[in-house]
Image (tube, rainbow over all chains, first blue to last red; front, side, top):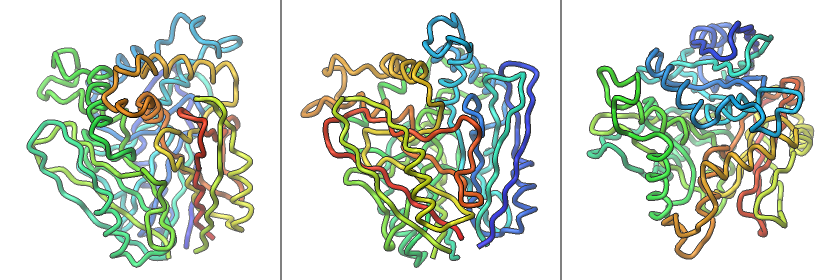
Length: 138
Length: 138
Length: 138
């Protein structure tokens, strides 16, 4: 069994933003030399998500509005977590969108449906954040 | 390390429906000959989910009503994604229910608690959809 | 490829509670002798979650209030599942928080960001429950 580990770094200038990382994940699989296996992609920070959906700007705007309805950023005082911080909503939004995806590797490629794309979703930016890619297989 | 890949196909006549796929996943594990490992089961379409919960019709009706409250189908105009499509709610409902499950394989069997069952949840049916099963192990 | 399986047991005296299980998961990885691989940690019961976030009591109180808003426990009659049971809300809350996490093992350690901690979240306690840990790798 082979394994390969890679980190991606982000420093998003806004509080929230979406980044398509599909090519970065495929590049890590290429580097691993693994043809058949599983690939874990997870946010290493607890106020960010990794998820799979469509690369369509209307949908991304819908996510923004929908998550703000489910877990509003303000007033900051609505959350107990916000004593010294203002990012409780980021923890909740990340919970909805998920920490990680596990994807199949087949023939050295991401084994994806037509529209599947992997995204990093930042909910508390303006600082250094990381994503972990771990590939195992043969 | 061995690996095995299998696709399941669905063409659900309704917009939304739940299908218990536990036996199909166990059949794929049987075919793989893998006794110890991990099994990924994921929707290959971005308007459908794979999740684990109880096979109980009351709960499934509760899911329907609950998801409709969290991400209403109509009016279609409430979503930016719905320029040429009407399925933005399907993307959001699938986000709540999840894209994938990862399950342990032990002694050649799904290593499950008493009530765990794997479901495919269609949110935008009346077309061909796919689920991917990837088993790795020995 | 090696694999290792371990169960954790819980009997929480309250209906809902959070338990940090990070050390238990690391202990299972230690027992496995696996240095590089993946580790699945999942609730074996369908009214409990395993998730990763911050070990901060304010945030945990926020989760309680937020989940109660998204999937209220009462009135029990609001859910079709609650014919003979009263735990439909527990199935829905667990859906939001998730069934499982998959974590990378690197150099024999949980490959984690600074604040990542693994929690068991009980939504229907006062009975015996289980968590499964399955590690595969080399």
